[in-house]
Image 1 (spheres, rainbow, N blue to C red):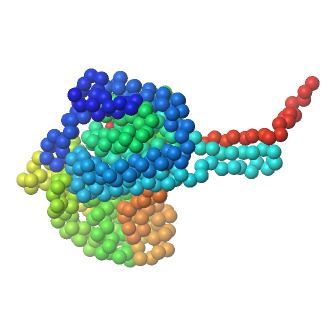
Image 2 (cartoon, protein in one colour; image 1 turned 90 degrees about the vertical axis):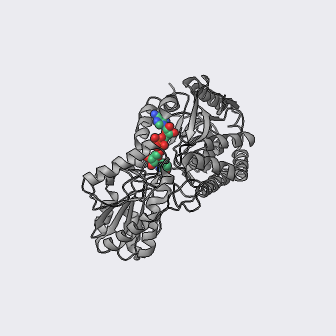
Image 3 (tube, rainbow, N blue to C red; image 1 turned 180 degrees about the vertical axis):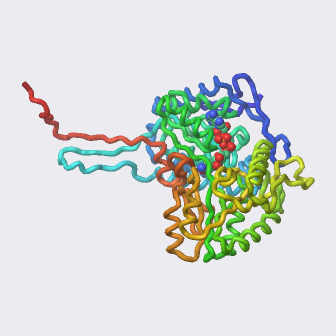
Length: 491
Ligand code: NAD
């Protein structure tokens, strides 16, 4: 029986023995069989996290000691890079080399939070009274449910686990049911590094089955979630009952604005990468191209030429530039999204269908797609496809470019290309999105905050705020010369 749940420091099978088969999106081959938790297992994991937190077994460690633990985890992750990258590419279908880059990013994330934790925490406040000392102290927030998506499975979990450990929280990790293997590997490393029993717990299974208690149980203080908007809304509703803290990283439909005075060659190349990297399965993908009318034909023709030549393939295909979609259901959704765009009046310039190459027959390969002549109110412009689908709109003025870029319920990221630094700075400032790239698209660093405006989320990951999500802030006022308050008459 497979035993891949980690509860209270022990590897366990599901209480009813249930298991789940993970299949490669590249060819549907069986890549792993993992335990599928029951409701009883979830309650056990929450109980273990709560008991470990309340016992003080980890909260009593100093920030410095917890940072050293996180640093050790970074070393072990680095040691196991290739083993973990293999699991990640098996589950997601992404190229092995991309999975190696992802693990490198995971290691950097752990190192960033280790360094942040080692800094001084808290501060003194001058309250203007000589005999009063006032301290602001940071304390671990409590028990956290950490729920991740399937596109960057380990990285999105790492953005939560590393700060939770530095802060001293106890937690339950739940990766996507489609991509569980890298989270199992991470838990083994967390165990090997010497994390106290019950602090880190792992639950596997579909959100609809194992998620409910993780987001509503009164013993959970914080839900940190990365995934789709609809699931995020469900979590907000469920968390209301017990007023949980929430950190939500949701979807995006991210504007990518190109002005006529930009470095057009660089802008085009980045636009192709922004939309089609990882087949568009990137929350910050630049899939909403907004291009100045005078350069529309030049830019779009070249993007279409490039998109048609993108080479698709599985984890070990050295010629491949990107891989399959995660599942058949997702492929069907992306396909329906494109058809709906065409029905609404968009012009299909390239792609718009599943790859018909024989070597892709068993995989979920969808061709890079460009939809031109799009208008702001179309479904394909407003909604995220989370697939390789670029929509194109035109603008005639700076004000119009900004208005289009902000005409969305989302606010995760955006890009602006211009040779006029002052104009680019004005547009970057006016766009209501959490990350803006100027004359670039896509890079991020763990030291810089990541997160969404509007319906792209609540709170921030990474940077300094990414640790703050896992901390409570307490003010301690100490009067060193006690005296009567004298407010009421003492009759
Ligand atoms: P999803 O919302 O379907 O699932 C995300 C996770 O939530 C999975 O682990 C799933 O099992 C779980 N879940 C589902 N229903 C649940 C419930 N009722 N209770 C508790 N947990 C539940 O999202 P997905 O399809 O895995 O990921 C794609 C989405 O994630 C896209 O919208 C993408 O934009 C977003 N995303 C955002 C960021 C970001 O940084 N903002 C990063 C990556 C992905």
